[in-house]
Image (cartoon, rainbow, N blue to C red; front, side, top):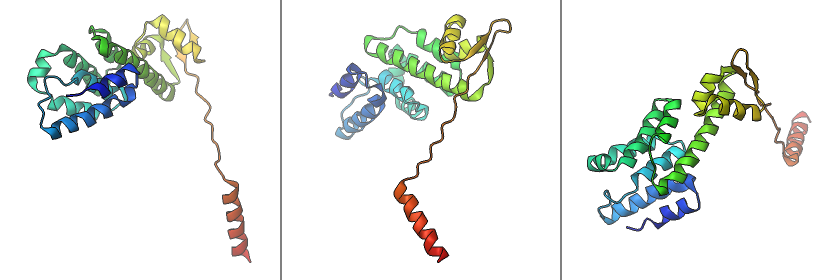
Amino acid sequence: MDLSPVTDALAVKSFDKIADICDNLMLQVAAEGVSFHDDWPYAIHLLGYFYVDDCDSARFLWKTIPTSVKESKSEVAAAWRIGQKLWTRDYAGVYESIRGFDWSQEAKDMVAAFSDVYTKRMFQLLLSAYSTITIRDLALFLGMTEDDATTYVVENGWTVDAASQMVTVKKQAIKREQKVDSSKLQRLTEYVFHLEH
């Protein structure tokens, strides 16, 4: 079984392609009738789904993993713990699951990249859902200490009221661009002119 496309994608940090590469390889290997369960990089495959925010596919993959693999490979179980926290929307628990395991060298970079992507997703969620939030809750959502979380959001233009321990979210201005092509405008003008005369 040739897993070089997976290792190549990991080497160049194309983490967004890992899930698709693993899916295609799994289909190819299964079609050939090769027994692959013991050697399959399930942890990387699960992490690939989490990286692209596809918890449904990760859940289906988890159900297909043999029990012997789930019990013998602790990294697979650790990756799934992240998935469980994502599934239940336990935002702080995601970070605890990431930090709570000593990841293998091949998974370490991917887990770090997922953590960064997840922090950015949480930041966008906070941006759209809150106008003010406590520093404590902010730190839980971003998986940081209160000081680091405060610094992170201040760098993004949010304001902090130290007395009340509240952060005011700076909403981004919504840019609306009209995408009107001049040729379309010309055709519309001709059409309206034709209707009027």
